[in-house]
Length: 530
Image (tube, rainbow, N blue to C red; front, top):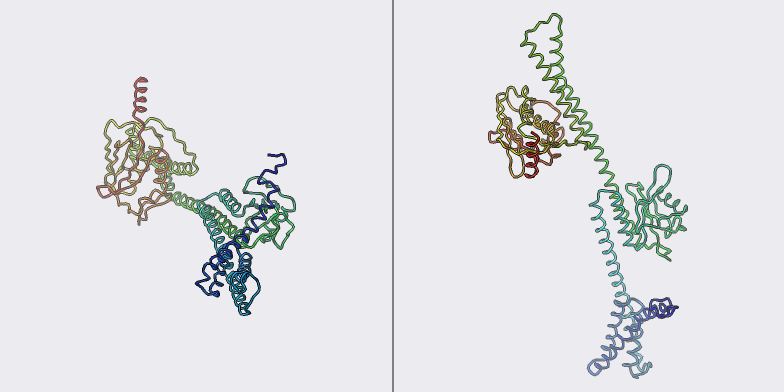
């Protein structure tokens, strides 16, 4: 290759020749098509009338119109008339016309060729525009599918600018207003880089954000700017500005591109509004839950706190009363009342604190090796006063494997489930507590003889603040079962409710059992320690 690069087929010296050849190629094919029709006509002239042969020249006209467009087809019409005159109209091989009637034939053939050319060209143009519209619709559909699956604004904007940049073959960026100071910032761009903006361009972007109308090169407003700038609007509210860097030498912005950009901008606006509405809905939901919690706490203060507090106050007042003299049994009853009320208040406050820790995500598990029988024993001691009017059956076979869990939290779950059973079942009814190991899982079940939970309520009963609607039923915050669900799921287990064979309910939670070798290693270490 020479240093000047003249042998390079892509060099600038060869481009004019290649461009000229591409420009005349349709006309060369047109000459070839008319020549082919002429040869066919000469071969068929002994069998057909000359007028029939004249209409053969409409074929290259239609073919040129569909294949190359208007001007090659007009050239085919004129060339066809000339070839017909030269090769078929007497005197043959001369452009002279021996009979004036053939002039009318020339005019008809030329007119039909021009009309057919115009119609074919129009159809060809419509086909091209239909293809372009189809491509735009496909691009819009692909973009709508992509942004519909995104829940993050930054991801949506990145996908959006990439799609628009690919469709327009230009650099595309999105700018948004920054605070109340009138500044703007680039939030997404494709391809990345090259996002430096002059002060004049920033001023145009600010104008678009303020007035909600397009501006910049190719528009009627601030057309001296170097970029095209379109607003992204929703409900007469400008959300952002779409900045398109034109290709070199591009002075205007065609209507087709403008319509495509407006369609893209409408999709972006819908996506932005969708995310904002979703965030507002989440905020409303948080406020509603906060209000619900506030109401639940107030209701609980009137029931779960005031009731034990009144019991404690009454018992303490009796013990401190002047001249009060109680025997040992009565004093014990009053002290038990104080203790039971204090424990009830303590459990209520613990429920609120546990729910706050679960909601904030700061619940930390203090996992240790635990024997489920030990946890059951502690839980039963805590609720013996609450369940003193019930019959509690415990069915736990010996030799159950140890679990690695937070002893206090699992105890809390059992206490909540036992109290829930005592609260919703009639006195003297039976409550059954059983545990089994099955398929690397420890199953703990709490059966009762209370009113069955309706099937539609079995999933919702573990939601925050949800209580069964029962006339005259016990009060409460509706947090106990929700806390049980959060604690069990934090341990990697599950919890649910199902109908029991006795006609009541059966609450079951599961906890994963550790690997056998890990449990055996712990037992060996415990034996050595002893």
